[in-house]
Image (cartoon, rainbow, N blue to C red; front, side):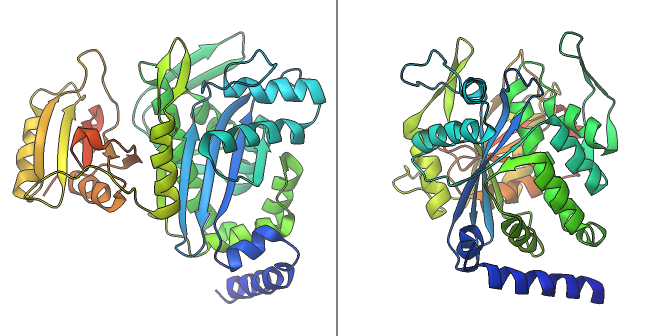
Length: 387
């Protein structure tokens, strides 16, 4: 324990001294919000596509982190350029300039326009960098609730996982976060990546990993392209020491699919941004109810009458369940999903705790007339017993 105290003491002193020359560190110490993006790219050097784009917004005052996933097929319009999807933008700019910085800046600038926010920081990591980072952590523990099988001989990608708990090394972790197949492949992939990020943060808080921070910083800096300094990285890691994983809100860019392209809903995106900045959304339509929480339940488990069973249980807990039904006869969910519809994450967490669910996302939609939507998945048999 004494060793950990000394390490964090040194980090704290260094952080304070260098805060005067490092803006990110200064902002965190002074309690100012920090925005940035993580760009995960593929390994094709001739045309490096952004396979994953994630926006991060951290409030140091409340130690709260917002994570917004950007669908790779999000529609963009760049004057004079014949590209339609945001994942093509990195490849276009990198091919033209041979610069990862210029490519990252092009994506960063496009996201600033979409979100209407200043995004000063970026970090781009390719497959090798991702593998090396996870390996230096000693792997990441995940639970896999569904069989995962995918083979792409052309792309040399082969993914095979049975159900169970795994300590994934770098290569296996990469396969896990890249897996994308099925009726709701994009949503499952986003949930998987967001869940994996939570586990990485949790791993970084472990004492045996803390000891290896200098080596982790070196691996990071040698394997990513970023405008975040080494000392700013130390500040971020220092923040993780007391970070509560429940202070993470997961969202995705609002929109709808059309012919293989994700069309952003800018009115809904404004509400997403308002929630990030203020912690709540103003002018949402209120609905009368006898309960503090209003819920709708949809059964996507394949188990008949499950929604009705859960409704009866929640009503006994004084939860107002105003609608139940089958989610989609042609679509089955592997994992039960709890959706915060009004920007009140505490209510979604309460419902998730009540039914033993782990997957929680925020997707503002006051037109549904509920605080929380529940989509029951095939994992129901493995969830905690509802008391």
